[in-house]
Image (cartoon, rainbow, N blue to C red; front, side, top):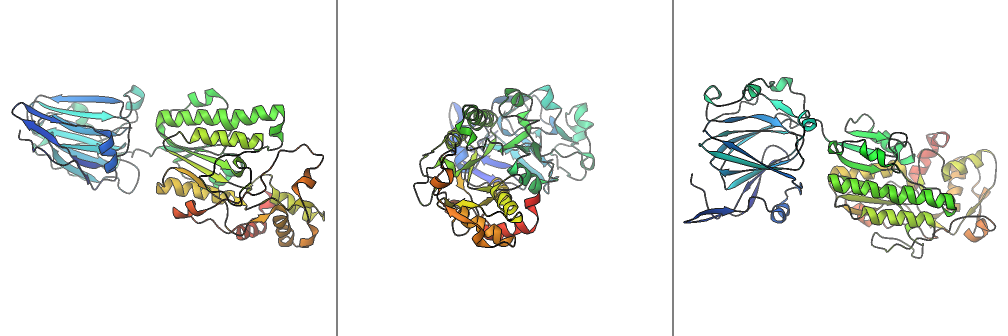
Length: 474
């Protein structure tokens, strides 16, 4: 075998999404040759996923013509040749529009190929004593083998041009029996798990993802982030991302001894369990944050502002954000004044208006509403578009308002006079009441999320639609 020495490390796209072919630098002299078969830093910089291999396998093949069947496995593989030469064939057996797409190539020791989970892999040796080596990012197990998807080597629809005819090749009886493409059940995509599926945001995510088999919803009855058993009961290898829509949000109750313990248990300890799981299994973790991580001392808050929480709830949200930030693949979506299904400020004001009650409402806390349908859409946008990981502020668009301004809007939109609402200061409203401190300025700077191509809807239009569509009665 003649190996081409001193190639430049180069990545080549193929017709199969995610399958990348590499030229490897091989350095040789009179003693033999040397190559960097896998070099994480250089290859990741070229665009190879940082797929975190955990096992190295070698397949030695004594005779030319040895043919290994088309097996799609539930993990990623990085394949190269140690000695000899192969004809490789790869068929996309994943659910989706590229199902059945074929790519073939001859590989020697100066080449390698990355094969994502669910792409069928096969090869035929072209020389005696060929050693085929591959890295995988999961450990083999009998349970994992049950998730394989297979395709017959002789399938007529993919028509792989084997250099050595299959009737003259060495192959196993099992590989001869695998199904044709028409009978193959495609390998499903890894799932996204939504935690806290029965809350305001969880319900909005259900509305958005309804019918998508790749998204799984878990309420507290089936997944409690405060219970270690919830984490042990799932096979995390079948997931790609976790959306954490669970949180302790009782701002005032968090100031009590019992509430403080609950807030820390859910917003910090539970989040730490999610973060640990995401790190261990290389998952994307989406976490929802709050304007309460700030003291409201600035007119507008961007993503780089240091935490300055005033009360227990804000302290636990800030601590949770800090924990999530160590996950390599994370999105923190920081929101303010959330409105969705369930009890919320807009519903309360609409109910008061309906009953003819004239409330006093705080007029020195300023910010923007964030409707849960927009939070859900933003999360989907970040995941679908592969936005840079990190923290993103999110609220609805529009001129910042006080709670009293919003209450007046609700009264007007429901047919009551705006002046039914009386504005009072935060100090006056809470005088004599046990209440948590609140930031006076909660307006979030939206420049970063807009730079990803996501533009939130206007708060005024969302509020009108929310009231018009009867959401206040849900």
